[in-house]
Length: 420
Image (tube, rainbow, N blue to C red):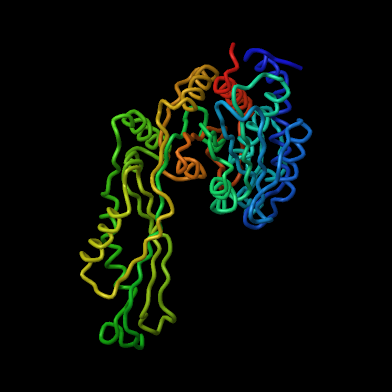
């Protein structure tokens, strides 16, 4: 068929929304746990779906255990949009903790049930559906839409989005939509960076019965250093005037989702002492201890500022024999609030939900960073129920899935020049 206007494309989509719900359920029924499972079946399913929709696709990647699927519709010139999603899910864990079978994909009157419903197979279904509808509609695209489906986001992304960006698959893109879960009233337009801080202390071994009289306890040394770790949390981000509203939105959302008083997590460094290793036996004074601290960096905070503060933390502790390593994985990154991809999603989400939708920064990180490193305006927007993500009894609302699919489609129509 051939649809000439956005309204015609939308009517086609509305007539097939039940297919979107079934697609989500079908994806859930395919176990794709990472790192304990296989991604082969779900990747093959995506390839078959695209092929049946008449959309040429290709399996690419550098690790056969974590393949990617890429596809494109439209013409080479004009506006270029990337749609990104991951099909791997975190392990379901203890089945006894679930109120339903985690890979049932059961559809109730209001929800779809199962591991990955919110994170993020509903989002993947939404972008696949939107791409299929546009291809089926025959509408003329003033540009192209590229699809990036990856299978290792939950394990860091080195074989997925990061690899795709490093190997030219994101070149010359004008925008990117990552269908990660946000809920209907938030558009993620920026996120914090991440660095692993490893502190190492060296002491002198002795018999445990002589502790305090002989030897030098490496664990106690690091305890003194960790007493000052809050110095890192005093570091604030640096924002431009154009980021003021997004920062206000972000603090508001953080307070709402995490509890009153947590808004400062957005524009301050966070420091989580996550791992500590030290000692050999309880009857020996430990001569070595190592601590790993997960630091999340707000926008505008650089390497030198962090390193200078780490040195001050150690100095203030008053101990010697302490070393550190900093592994900077990414820095804070963002998309301007008035970027076309932000404005398109915001306009259609507000029109459909009849609710204000806030562009905001995220306190964690995701694959969006890899596109932003390439200066591609990138957002996250996807259906979700927060309860159950990376936990038990994960679900997603059917209304949220249907609306997300339509919002993606309408936004792509705007960006591809498909008029009313």
